[in-house]
Each structure stands twice: as C-alpha cells, then as structure tokens.
Length: 108
Length: 457
Image (cartoon, rainbow over all chains, first blue to last red):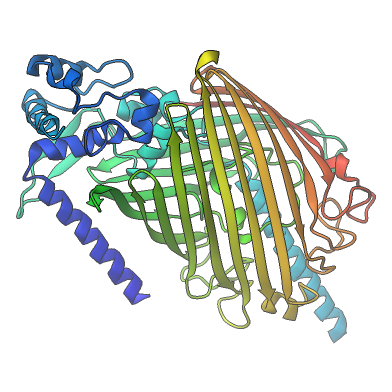
C-alpha cells in the first residue's frame, strides 16, 4: 500500500513539473491548453474531434496566408464550431499563441 | 436449536447479498449524466460533447480524456516559475444541478404495492464538474435518491492530466481518482455509462450481476492511471479498495456484501479508429480481479475475475442531415470462487461462472429525437443457495439466467431538457419465464414501462 501511495506522489510530481516546464514557452503552453483538443499537437486538425468538427489545418497555406489580425479575430471571436476565447485569453496571450501557430506553419 | 440458528444465519447471509446486489444494481441502473457546467466552461453547446446525454461524441471523449479542464471561461490567473506556484482558477465555481421525475408501471404489480409508481424526484443531483486548475478537473456528483430519502455521494472521477509525445506521436496521460470501475471510461459500451442510460429505480432487476458490472459502484475508492497514444491506443488501470458510504471508518466490512482484501486491479485497453469524416470505431477489453469477504475484512475470501470485450461504432449520415447511428456492445465473463460465501451457507459450492452480453443501437434524428433498441442476456452457474427462491427477487431453480430487450425513445425539446419513454421486456428472469421466483410470478410480470422527465441546468 505504501508503494502505491509513493507511486501516486511521484506521478503527481511529474505532472506538476511538466506544467512548470511549459511555462517557459508561453505560446506552446497556451496552444497545448486550448487548441490541441481539435487541432492536434501538430496543428493538423487530424484528431477525432477535429475531424468531426471540421477543425482547420493550422499548417495549411490557407491559414498561413491569414494576417495576424485575422487570426487574432478568429481566436478571440470564434468561428463556425470553434468557441470564442475572448474571455480567457488577453491580447498578449493571443499574440504569443499566433507566434507559436506560425512555427507550426513552417513545419509543413 | 444450533442447526436452526445456522440455517437462519445462512438465509440471512444469502438475503443480505441478494438485497445488496439488487439495491446496487437499482442505483447503478440510473447513471445518466450530462453536465451544463462543462458547457458554461467551454462555451460550447451540450451537443458538441454529446449526441444525446450521456452519450459522448469525439469531442466529449477528448474533453474527458483531457481531465475536464478545457475552458474558454474567464480565469483568475498568476504565472508560475520554478520557485513560485501559479494560479489558474475559474471565476465561477463549476456547479450544475439535475432533477429527474419518473413514472414506472410493471406488467404485474409487485405484491402489496401500488402499480404506476411516481417518483418525485427519482433523483436530484448536484455536480462539481469542471476545471479545478490547469491540469486538474472533476466530474463529482452528489445525489438525493427518493427511495432512500437522503443525499449520497454518487459517481466521481477526479483527473490530473498532461500531454506529451511518445515516438513523435501525441500522448495524453494522467491519473484518475474514482469510485466506480468503468466510470473513467471514454465510451458508452462499458457498464458505468452504458445503455440503458436511465432506468427505473422501482422495477425489479435480475439478481445476478458481475462484479465489474456496477456491483462495486460507489462502494470503492480507486487510484489509477491512463494514457491515450496517437489518438488511437487507450490504456487505463486502477487499483480499488472498499470504501462504503455510511460504513464505519476504518472499514470493518459489517453489513456490506463486498469488502476488497488488499487491492482489486481494474484494467482497460482500447483502440479507436476514425474512417474518413463519418465513421468512428472503438474495440477494447476491460476487466478486474478482486478478493473479497462478505460482512468482514478478515477470514475466508471470495475471488472474482471478470474479463470483458466491448465495441462502439458511430456512423454519421451526411445525406440525412448528419443523423448519427451508434451501435455498442459488451460481453463480460466472470469466474468466481465463493469460498467465504459457500462456507457461510450463502452458496451451495464455491465455483461459479457468469456471462453477460449486451448489444444496442441508437438512431439520432439530429439531436432532438433518438430511438434505441437493446438486447441483454445473462447466464451462469445455477446455485440454489446463491440464487434462492424469494418473492420477486429470487429464483425457484437457482439459475441466474435473465434475458430480454429494452426499447427507448427520447425527445430533447432543449439540449438540457429530456423526455424519455422506455419499455423493458423480459423473456426470462432469474432462471425461468414462468413462476421464476417460486411464488407464481412470471418473467413478463416484470416488464416495465418507464417514463422520465429530466432537467439539467
């Protein structure tokens, strides 16, 4: 029983450490928390909910052609089945997020 | 005199086990939940996660997998670094409420009771359901049951979650703390969230149920881990200990049919695959092993090993305005060795098997109407003491065989208001179709019409 409790503590600790590590890259952290559900870790949108909801491929030319203002507007106000993040993300966070999304585009 | 006392004690043990099983299966038969605080938290309507509550769609499964923490709601936050803890707290507490009102009529009245039975309410629940912080969230429920006339802790799943990569593919992993084997599962093919999603609390239920099929619900506490790799491969494992609501602390086991000795491991493995935009398939296996002592935590033990298979298939029909067809099934095989129960006279011999099969299909007309038809069958080793004769709940021949069908129609005038009409028909109940209980009751006498009105807000 003691071993089980110890294992739970170790795993909890690792989860907390991972959280602190993500804080070093705010755009990636914001992306992980808010976007990977549908758009996936690689931004392709090829996750089960992304496919079902028609999530855009963030690495695509269609997205990369959009200006920062257009992307910020989509994130802030939502689009089609994508919810609005205006209550959660401020302008600075949206800016960090767009910078990270641009790095996904380059991987295409 | 001694012989008579022993005989009475054996009957008492048998009745206690059967009664506990019936109560548990009755409670467990009504698990349907859909939680508006998730909707408030995400800014998404109920049908983003559910075809109809509590059936999860791809987004709902992903939301649950990721610890119920996805949010677009306003937060109170502070940045963290290596030395300072951060904060990511929802401005509003994620609370929801549910009210269920029901009417049940059985084909034959249960002796000395009225038929056409209203429950007002059948259940009233409060939920703490949503993100606690960035990586921790919960589905926690407290329910008032009309029959017991008190609030009690209900299904609970608290998750700690994170994401990473393994072999360059996504990996979602975390911990779950829960009180019901399969409550942490993502699909509606396993017992905790399986069909029927709601059912009557007053209609008779078959006496036999495997351990993983709701027998331990809300009577255990479990800590486990889970992982989904590459959106395809799902693993979960939980270790359970007995934790009886209303029981003594520390647990003495008195008055409870199952008291886990050591820990009871539960396992789950599943593969999900999408085919194009419109088809999603899950196939998997789950099970658990437990050693338990009835009414005590010392002495002889009973052993249970449950192994199960399950599948779920969803097909969206674009040419029919995206109507959805869902087919689900599970097969559970249990081997048990009731050493303690047989020694106490609650079973004629130790070794038994129990097999349960269920399959059902739902057609969703948009998200306003749905119709489901399901078939179920439980067979096992006959035992004249374990399944002893008793009015309504017993078996004349000791055979646990029960089978039948459930037809359900649901109407959702709003996504959080449901009207449900359900008919359960038995072709066999506790071993026979005619005079199954030895008191002259037929299986069809337990056929039940169940109407439910439920509100979640």
